[in-house]
Length: 213
Image (cartoon, rainbow, N blue to C red; front, top):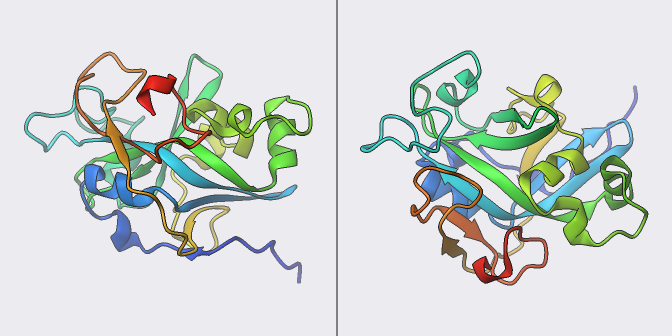
């Protein structure tokens, strides 16, 4: 029997994600996103996230993909917590989210940036960058993060991130995280003043302008 590469840390529970996304998001900082691939495990520590609320909130979050209710595109968000919701932007890039809330109530956390823990050489290859590229160039920003880890909608949307058999998992290793810096969300056109972006302050992999860190 072929032995699978070992993932860092240990799995989070589904209960971790069965809460409003604005509560889950800051607790995700310092946790690990790990992807088991044919080229080994690619993993990074989560250093920046954004919360997006479901349509059951008052008012609904106009920046959330779920704000008009369930559709074939967003149905993962209305299912159980702890699943990957991956969507395409600009026709060629992807963003990865994690579903929150109990089944039937949509909500999610967008993964915006990672600090590389394993597989950085392969991440550079995936990004089309030279070996030794700066950490910020690999996984700073949601699209770079997905490209570095090789995540696509076709392959990874709907994966259970707390299933030990899943190639994509969210894990923890008890590394303490600094208190989150809370800012408004960035890169959106609606509800731009809602303070639901959470970052590890001063971390070099955090995306966006320096004034937001």
